[in-house]
Each structure stands twice: as C-alpha cells, then as structure tokens.
Image (tube, rainbow, N blue to C red):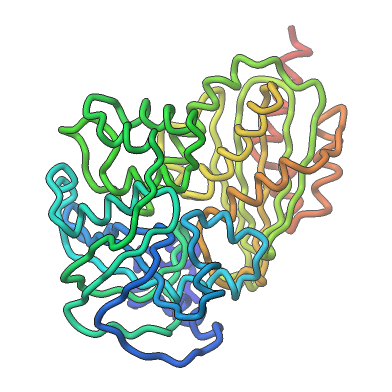
Length: 409
C-alpha cells in the first residue's frame, strides 16, 4: 500500500502500477464462479449504460445487458437504480454486477447530437424507465463469470467488449416526461433536470440521460462520462434544493442523525443558522485505501461551493443531496456536518449511491436533540474514530466563532 492510495483510490495511477493492485486484491476476495465466453448476449438491460472517461473527448460508450440465465437472479438484476440494492451484503452488491456485460465502442462525445445505430440504442436504454430486452453482438468472445471491476464513484462493472451491433428487441417503456425533455432542443440541462425531478424521475435515470447526451440545448449536447454524470446530477439537484431551503425558517435545535451500512458509519449534525456544509471522511486503520488511517474533509459556507470537492470527491455531493432533501421536506434551514467512518468491513468500493442512500436512511431516523453544538459534539466525539479531528474541525471552529461574534454584538 502506497501513501498516495487514499488520494488516487484506483483512478489516477499515482503508484505507476496498472491495474490498481489494491482493486485486484479486492477482486480476489469475491467468490469464484465458473467462467465461460459469449459472442452475443440477448437479455434484459436493467436499464444500464456506461460512458468511460479515458481518452476524452473520444470515449467508450455502450449499453449493458444481463447474461445470467437463472430466472430468479435475472429478476433481481433488472433494476436500473442501484439504490434498490441498499441493505444487501457487500458480496451480493459486488457479485450482481459481474452478471452485467457491457458492449461499447469508441465514439466522440459530440456524436450524441447525430448518433449512429449503436448510440441510438444506448440513448433509448438511458431513456427507459424500467428493464428492456436488448441484443448485443461482439467483435470477439467476451469472458463472463469473472469478478467485476470496481470504481469509487459508480457501481462495479462486469465484463465488457467491442460491440458490433446493439439493438433493443423488446418494448422500451419511456416515461412521457423523459421523452418530452429528450426531444426539447432549446432547454438548459439544469432546467431539464428540475422538470424531471418535479415529475418524480429519480437521480439514477437523470444521470443516465445526462451521460447519454440527452439533456441541454441541442448544439451543446454531448456524452458525459458516467463518473462525471453522477456527480453533476447530485450537484445540480442539491443546488436546486439549496435555493429552496435557504428561504425556510431556521432549525431551533441541534440535531444528530445516525446510520450504518456496510461498515460505513454516518453521523449527521444539523444546527440552526445560515447554510454551511462540512463533510469529513475517516478511513480507519485497515480500510481499503489506507493501512494507518486518515481523515479527509471538504466544506462550503453560505452557498454551494463552486470548486470541485477534491478531498471527498463525489461522496461529498451525494451526502449533501440527502441532507438537503431532508431539510426541504421538513421546511427548515440550517447548517450541517457529516462525519463518515469507513471501516475495514467496507473492503470493496461500490459507488457513491451507498453514501446517498445511507445518509437518506439516517435522515429518516429519529434525531437526538441538543441545545448547543458543543453538547452534540460531546455526544458524537466518543462514537467516531478520530474525536480530536471532529472537535477541531472547520465546522466546530466556525460554530465557536459565530457564538463569539453574537456575544460581541
């Protein structure tokens, strides 16, 4: 394990070793199953599609289909929203994605405006509201049954290969609002996302539409790598919510919410006052990216940050979305600190959907209430892996300064 592993997380190749040796070790922990090879696949797409980021603006893009033959497994795999996996074991979450095979080919991101047949199929799958049967023909046999590859942002990815033909062979059920927005060529992506949200289209499908180059004004449409599309969707959705939340009356108590999933322990502290958001991630000793432990943090004050959250990366935006959804639902404004402890039990990264859904789970729980931030910190500090980092965090220091400023008036 190298010192820069926590900064790279298998995506930047900072150690100079490819593929990532830590992710190779993760793959070795999954149960082995009998492998085979296929030249074509006819099966349901959850719906699912993938746009890579390497080589941008020439990227690999294409749809995914299930090659599992067991009827019960196939029923479980046909979900386009990874949130439906919430509550499952880490082994089950990872193994399910080994049963998805992705066909793709190199294409220019701006080809979204004039797609060929393969990209048209990919976009149709992105628009689908539920599972749709597709057929993929590959240039050469693809090995299936192997362990999936992992990514800290998106869900694990099963085998993939160069696709010669991709075709929808069943009926794609496309929500009316999605069809209308995709055919609207003079609407900004942000406005389109707002309308889709109002029509109860979830963030998983919105990010597929964004990645498939189906949102925004016609001349500006382009494919967006899946990793970037997930974060962009979380960011835009949370900014839209913040614009509502900031007009709500403030909380009158300090509240602490808690949840735990796959050895990810979350403590969410809400306080009265103007908006601020601080997220701290503690990768504890023995966790996947560090052997010694490390605490990372990003924050914003008064309004959503404009610079990318380089320390926490995509998890920052997923957690912020879950918090703002809750604050808008209860009609209150305030500030928030999220502490995430990542233990060794989380031995495989499965995507930021885990952060989004666990924070949502926390916000559905009954909070513990306190009169002051200091009391809340006294409660939370003994329950986290690095209590001094919590006590000396930007958010806590900010709270002390605000109190001193109040006394000075």
